[in-house]
Image (cartoon, rainbow, N blue to C red; front, side):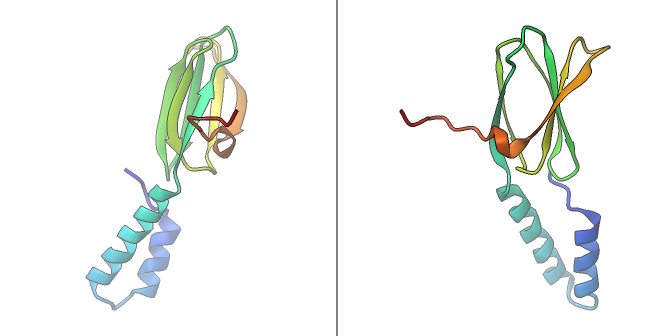
Length: 113
């Protein structure tokens, strides 16, 4: 489920104060749809010989945390402005080894020759 930022809801409440609740509900659903359409499919490949944990923690996109084995890939959806955190090592003592902007990880199934 996609969450709407509090300041956006407050803006809508302020502008629709006294208007019908139907108009307000319509605006919120349009805002949710526009947020969903801004998500892109991303791909990350673990280039190391160690197990990695990748994580996206963002209110708008939800929460993602997955284990990526060495030389394996993960495909996921996120907002282009989200950051993928890459933690290397075992789950107990992993360290943040990289932070990658998701728009740099956009997945393309077919690459031109």
